[in-house]
Amino acid sequence: MALPDGFVDLATAYKEPPGNFVSIIGVVVDIMQPVRSAKTGHWMFTFKLLDRRLQDSVNGSEGLIVRFFKDSESNLPQVRERGDVVLLRSAKLMPVNGVPTVVSNYQTRTQVFPVASIPGPGYSIAYQGTNRLHSLGAPADTEGLTLAAQAYVIQLKTEVRLPDAKTLPEAVGKKREAAPVGNAGPPEKKARHSTFGNKYQLVRETHHRKYADLCVQVVKKYFSQSGKCELYVTDYTENRDVWYYAPPEERNGEERDGDDFGHLANKAWPGPYGWLVLKINVMDPHRQFVNNKVDEGDLVLLKNVKMKIMAEGAKLEGDIWRDPDNPSKINVLKLLRQEIPEIQELLARKEKYWAKRNLQHPPAADESAKPTKGEKKRLKKQKQQEERAKAAADAARVAERNKHVRCSNEEASLMSVKDILDLDNDRHIHTLPNGTTYVLPFVNTQYRTKVHVVDFRPKAVEDFAVPPVPPIPDRDATPSPIDSVSWDDSQKYEWYFSLCLEDPSSSATRQALPAPDTAEKPRIWVHVRHKDAQFLFGNDMDDPQNLRTNPQILAKLKEKMCILWGNLEERREGEEVAVSNRPFECCVQEYGIKLDEDDPERGEVPFGYKKLFRMFGATIL
Image 1 (cartoon, rainbow, N blue to C red):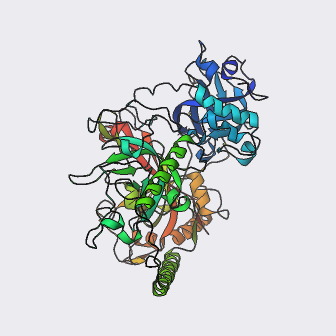
Image 2 (cartoon, rainbow, N blue to C red; image 1 turned 180 degrees about the vertical axis):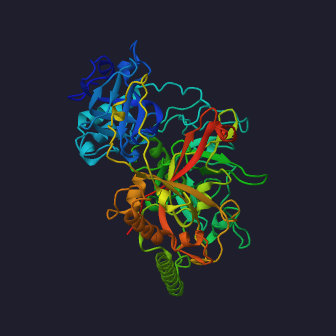
């Protein structure tokens, strides 16, 4: 198929002279996790693209390297997995270590087509009119998609053979694919050709200790008070290892079907019945997406579902955990295009099941299944009570919160300090394909929390402003485009201090604050760096200076911090007074630093990386 106007194939782009601008389309065959420059704070994201001509060429057959530099991780292209198709306009060729590399610039426009949203060539006719493929990117970048470019994307997916994934490296921070481990279950079947990739399976094919991508319909959705979400899904294939849901004609009033916790009452179960429904436990950040975007009856693609049977006598279930290598990645995709072959097959199985069932067991014609007037009134009253209780809880939360501190990212749910610390390593344990497990030293992710300040460092507020240390140039290193930032000698001091945070107590006033090392409640030390401190103090705060010789700035700083931590400073100065402060909301980022070879702590942390936390996103009004 001919390329759209203005685009070149990747083999041609690979040979373009340095400095030329190109527009290209390719399939993602390799991804590296975004990394942040310690010097400038900019983010770098690297992946490889491949098309048919480059795959068959002598040079570059492993893919053309594409590299993006952005000041925020959220501005990077939303490339999520191998098989995605990326369309780039006005990207620049710039050799890196002698290897042709496509580098983003301010003109570059990006459009990403998730692999699950691209249909097979047999369904391309549906996209020859006004229909458009689902894609990710800024509206200004995605609205210009032509029919020729769309047809090329569909064709490209079938032409490119994804290379086998390489052996997983042991180094921290590399991209990993969760793979089946152990010898449980029957032998693996040969992977079928699927729109959803090689990990796609039917429910009937899943079994213990295996990972799978599932195309399913949501039957029921439940949320527990602990914050977990349970999805009950089906693709209308039978698996005898899942829970059995008895049809109405088999029930005697004493038996209970469904899960082992009794969440699913017989009366509310809509079907299908038998061994057709799989329970999926959904954790953050996927839970938030399910809560806001997925409804019962929706068709969804569930990625990287870990199948399990917890104990003898238990049933097969699935878990969708946070990806430790990409904590913000959502592994639940709502499927809107029903012309995808796998969805067509699912809907055909569904129609066949219900046609057969209704023929054998016609629906009851009486009105007993419909709620009575009294039942409707009771349900309406219950809903009103729940709404009032929620409104009261929200009002109490707002009243308890420090109204003089505002936090950004309000759409993010709050997480406790205990959950952020992950004391049981639920988010930090990683399993290799050979079954070996180890604890990751850190995961690059961000949280939103509500906390009290219980301690601070340095001990004297006068030391919250420190002389900055200018970066030391490396004579042997080739400067990166994003590292060429001049040093501002006019900035003589910068903010830098640390706060010890704790989950709010039942009372805003605390009579005694034990030392952080001996406290029963989990506590977390967060660093507040210069830019985050400026955001915290607001626009009415002067630039930092030597606070020991500038009493005016010091007084204003103490006034600001008093709003944040109450009379904590007075108590630390020896006064026998109760510490009083209101909880406030802020954002916390988890990150890691690699310790030097001679650092005494290096042997005490995994892989030589130390886990740290940073506070940001809060402003004192």
